[in-house]
Image (tube, rainbow, N blue to C red; front, side, top):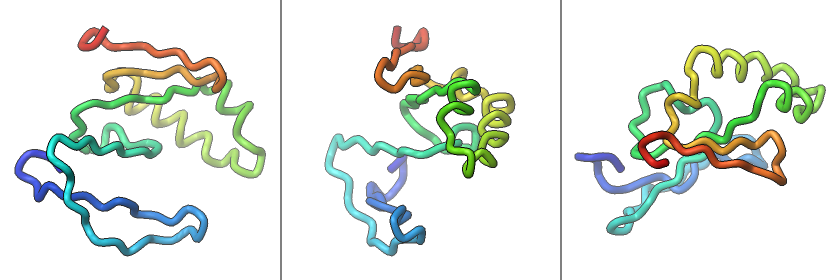
Length: 111
């Protein structure tokens, strides 16, 4: 999708219900189209996004919201916050500690 790319995208990579890869063919992007790429821990690995919106959850809120059987993921999110600093890399940040009351924070580029 980036400059010099083929102008196509894969509409899905992973089947969450079956927990396995999905085999799909690339689809052409419409002229002027926007590709949204959802995912966790994506910043700082060299992906060239035009605009990044980071959904921020504070460590304390994460600990409250993650079920006990999934607590093993918490150190990865803490390390990501410390080493990548996704808030600093994002163009906009949505504070989501309280999912029913999100708060938008824009960088100097947008605000």
